[in-house]
Image (cartoon, rainbow, N blue to C red; front, side, top):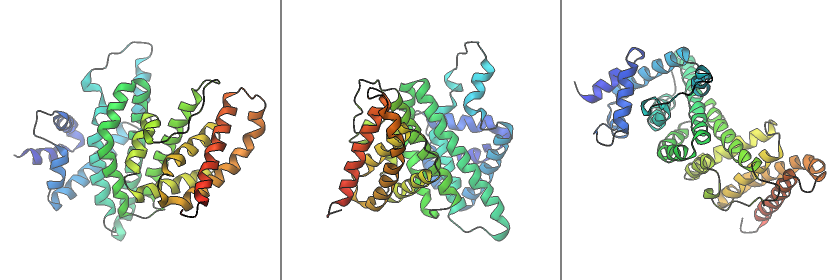
Amino acid sequence: MSKRKQFLESVHHERVQDFLNFIRLHKDGADPFDLAEVLPELQRSQRQELWERQLKLLQHSLTAHPTERWITGAEEDAGDMEVEISEEQKGYVCIPPVLALLTEVAQACLSHKPEEDQEDQTSLTIRILTNIFQKVVEIIAHRLRKDKEEGQELCCSSEEALYDFLLVTKFTTERSEFITGVFSSLCAAVIIDISRTLQKISPVEEVLTPETVNDLPPLSNTILKVMLRSPAVTRFFLSEMSSSIESEAIDSITQWAAVTHILTIIKQSDAFIVEFKEIALSVRRQIQNYYNITAENSDNIQRTIYESTVRMLIDILNQCQQPNS
């Protein structure tokens, strides 16, 4: 039996160990098995079979291991004991192939209109996909907090797989359940990531205006770097960020500053002037509520962040007013 066939048959809840062995082979540079090569070479019937098997495996796994415990479960079980985690137990190293599999399932699910009797199943599949994608992003963020070096390596190794996954958005529309689920996770991740970095700045430090994605913390760097490779993906992201503003999900000056940092990076493209102006004006209206709070203490870091955010917004709005924009 070929390895390709063995891999297909391993995607089953009773053969999880076999499936994980294939994932390890994928990570082993000395082994010729590479998911990035295997998946595109599958026949249509095999891709359909993989999709159905993967869906069943994901459903079973989510039932047996709720996503709420993906990050905290091991730590809660450990209690006060010091636990040494071996390389084989570091499940986060499988993030790139997991993203590759999510891409295959998403593409198979979204690239054709479901039959009337399959609409509920398709909707369930999309919810599972977006739920798992959210946890993937959370796991990367968690790894960066636990071990910055390993987290950065994970970010680098996940870039191409993340890009391929986001390109699946071409099969759907802006307000679809898939788009909302995926980009709400990305938007929240970037805003929280930058916001946490800003919160660590001391009162005497200056809040520097980012000039490139390399000036952002690792997770935001990776997400924006990947996103900016596709204008369509960037537009979806900006649309979701606008929705977050309207929903009042952003509720602190550091988070508003994070939004402004994002706009400052993306503004280097002239393709999104309308979106920039709309979001920048919304942010300017919102941060006016923080003026009195931050003015109480001119040495407060909140005041420093506020003033920096105002300056960045002025620059963004000035660019939007330029004739050649």
